[in-house]
Length: 157
Image (tube, rainbow, N blue to C red; front, side):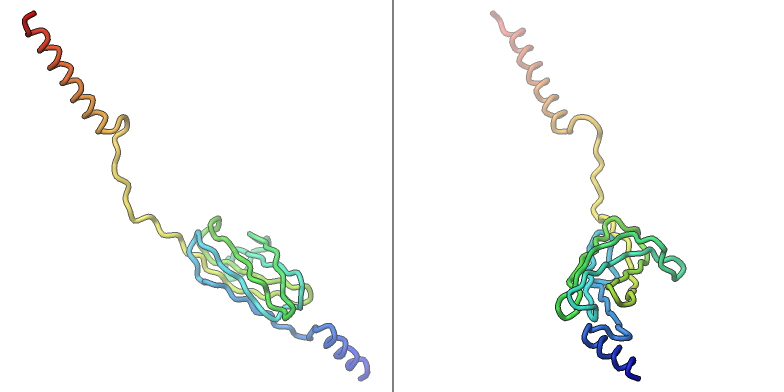
């Protein structure tokens, strides 16, 4: 009985609960490729270094190796300082975002990355070579030279 009380007092002093449920919040979620996701959270240990890891999700299971690992930290209240995840290099699909503190079990939240939208403006077709304006100017100058040279030839000296 004394041992259990001593462990409970030590846990309270260190702010280590027996079950410490961390929370991760992803904003926005889902997200479009090429934009960023902000990760915030709470119930981590005070002033600790943490990691945010991004894993590919396949058949409901997070992959073994992370696609991305970002360093994070918490404030004096155990709130995760905001971390930004860029999505520009990620394929469309579902990912696991995992927040790892020092002493607590990791919290995992799914992130959906939707494909980026294609540009709606169609490029105007272009003819390879000179711009059309240069061709018209060349034709006009050529005609002017011809007219001037014929006038000189037909004028009596």
